[in-house]
Each structure stands twice: as C-alpha cells, then as structure tokens.
Image (cartoon, rainbow, N blue to C red; front, side, top):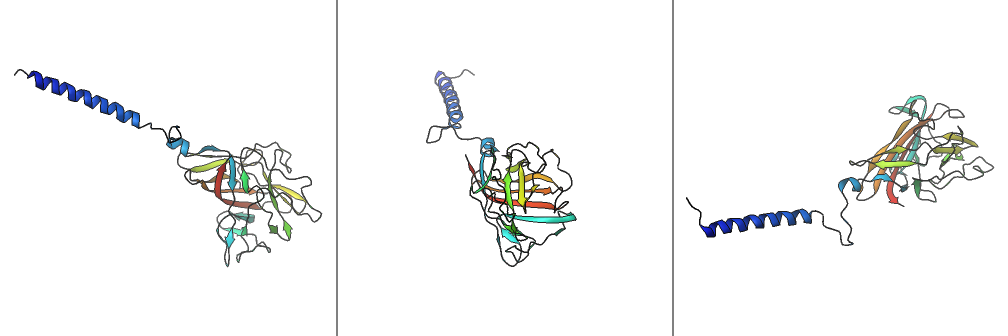
Length: 247
C-alpha cells in the first residue's frame, strides 16, 4: 500500500517534535540555581573532605549517664570497650560518674585543617590543663583536663598531621585525629586516633561517625589507649556531636 503524502509529512513532523522534547528534557536536568550556579551532585553534597569546625554540643545528664551531647569515659586497664569497667570520675556532674559531660571551648569545637595547640605554659600552678579552644576543661579527679591538637605530640615528640575528617557518599565520617592530646595534672597524654606512629592497636580505634550534609549534624567517636604516666593502659573513649560549620 502506498502511503498518503499528508500522512508521511505528519509522521515526520511528530518524530521531529519527539527529538526536540528529548533534547529540552536533557537540558533541564542541569538547571542552574537562582544564583546561576549548577546544582550540587549527590557526591558533592555528601561532604568529601570537611574543613572547618565540628561544633561540640554540651553533654546532658541527670541521674544516669550522658543522654545527649558530647562526653568522655575511661576504660580501666585490662577492661574492654564493650564492657568496661569504666573509671568513676568523682567530679562528674552525672548520676553515673563513669560519664563526664563535655562543653564547647572558645573555638566552639574541634577544628579540621589546622591545629588548636596547647598554650605556653600548658598548665597552671595546680597542674590544671589550660587548653580551652576545643572543649572547656572539665574537672577530673579535682584537676582540669584539657584537650588540644598539636603539630608535635607533647608526649611522644612525634610530628602529627592537622586533624582531618571526611564524609563518604553515605555520610560515614572518618579521618585522622592523631594530633589530639590531653593535659592533666602536669602531664600530657596522647589521645589521638590513630596514634602518632599510625597504629590503632591496644584499644585505639580510628575516628568513625555520621554526617548529614543537609543540616551539618554529625556524631564522632574514637578511642585511644594511654601509654605511660598515671593512667598507663587506660583507654579514653570520646564522643563528640553537634553541627559542622565549614570555613
């Protein structure tokens, strides 16, 4: 059967319209935002390397341990991260004194991409740690303990990289906090993860947490076993949570 000339022309016109619509649809998928910039991809929104301040939400507790916010605990030598036993801090404000609530310091939290080092001097005459940028030094057995990040670890005298944290596409937070250390009672203890030599053995576990790219909300945990000093073999358990603010 011979096709009618008008029918053939109509078919050709419809085919052309389909091609034009498909091309427009493809262009629309890359629409710019109101400011003219392209929409971020899912991978970019997930965070990648996060440089800024991980704000510390203050820990809240009453009759039990910390129920929200940031805290510190310490596993006694020979114990386990899962079952403890955890050391009691007589100066804890919690009903369960194995929990020590943390509050934000003068910088509001933990900085990545740069250091928040201990001051000089690092201690007052009573042995209280004076570093107060990351957290306000809580009282631990009548002495303030201070958290800092140093380019040279005071205990091991080892060079350490600036704190680094990244989020993958699923919002899993990880990185390197080997520069972290605590000053207490005139002594400095590395509390980094990994350790300055790169190890994560003997109770030291690498930083791990969650990150919400839409809100900046995060949680972060790491553990670090103390080597030497009054708490040799004890393991610090750190939990920070709050909101990340990029530089």
